Image 1: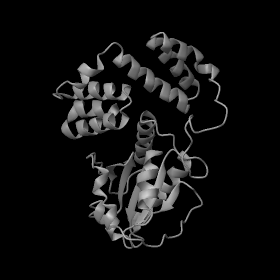
Image 2: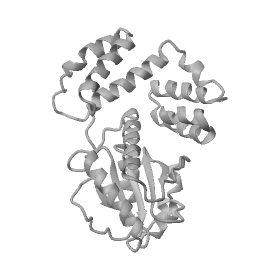
Image 3: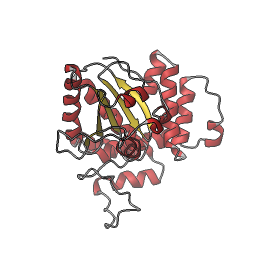
Image 4: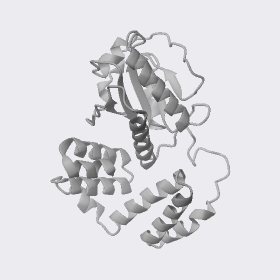
Length: 275
């Protein structure tokens, strides 16, 4: 599989050049899968990507590999149930979108997250490879605070927007939260990992482990001092990214990690990808 990691600004998709064309009917009943053209691209891709990761699949109905990739993506989108959305683009009828993405061959698959575009692959991958990519995307989205989509395909309401009563704290995590308030990171991590040992798919516990690791790495550091450091090596990229994340600058933190992946190779690149 030809995995790529270059970071492209969302501005590469010039919506001002995209004319209105009729929307083709979706072939599935899932609210998380839609056919996209010049008319609805901004709504279904760029704006939606601020609530959930959007996978954009550019392909041709006349091209068998495009159908294979699309079928695999549709299967996984249904399994991930709103954590990731899929935008299908027929390049035969939407050549301007293909040109905006600078797509030379199909299928071509991209991730759009918070309006930022990242190429993923342009060949027919193994399901296990794509599943691993989806897991990484969901993890990054959680770090960026993206709430995902509900069963109607609409953005999940945040706590401020949702008028429903506040969800009570899961009793399994009470000790973890108490430990985090006390700065006892190892204790908190142990609680979350104990939950994962019994329920490996528990998303709250997974996020808890990630958050504790971040708090532990940044405990006691001077954020302004760290952010002012020169980006001389991969460890500095990681350190500055952590500081940005703690300051609520999730998108710049993610952008910095992507830039580091492009900059370094070998073990240093692996460290950045794993973060």
